[in-house]
Image 1 (tube, each protein chain N blue to C red):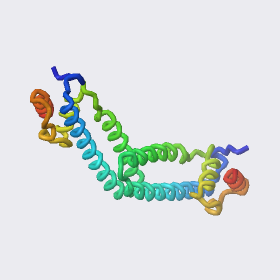
Image 2 (spheres, rainbow over the protein chains, first blue to last red; image 1 turned 60 degrees about the horizontal axis):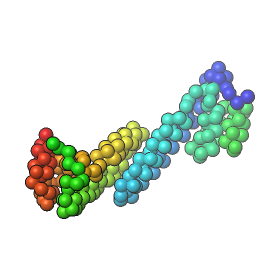
Image 3 (cartoon, rainbow over the protein chains, first blue to last red; image 1 turned 90 degrees about the horizontal axis):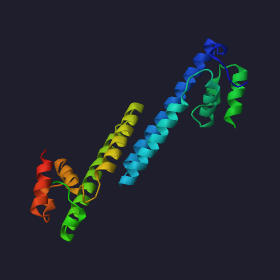
Image 4 (cartoon, rainbow over the protein chains, first blue to last red; image 1 turned 90 degrees about the vertical axis):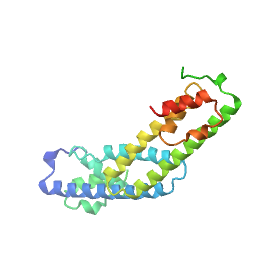
Length: 109
Length: 109
């Protein structure tokens, strides 16, 4: 079973997960900011600007949905962050082995 | 009566109007591009980026609606462009006096 409720996360695990979550978020946001700043400098015509707008719309929607810190979905969220490169598996050290293997397995799917 | 149909625009007037419309459009778009490029360089956090996104959403909607080249609404569109500073009244030289006065009057409202 992949779903894990809050009760099944020890206090230490919650700290580890929160820290990792926050780190991934900051990395992704910073990468996005850099990307937006870069693409803004190369806007020369209206279509470029509307492309940036479309891009921001999509990313905002994605980020709003993705960073969902509920313990019932956290394994999936962490796995996705690992898969996308925003988080390294060893930054989840401190989680119990079964959670780590779930994250690892899901991140390879 | 403010509405003027296509039949009431001479060929010369249509040329003048098209040229003015195009000029205003290019000016507004270029100003907007400069503004977006500038504000993009000062993005430092997520909220700044979503502010830029909100700004682009609003401007895109406004611009899509504003630049409506139909002769039935053109007097209003030209007046608005004059009012907003994207067009000068004397760039409409070539339109008949009655159209020019309508545009001038509306642009001061």
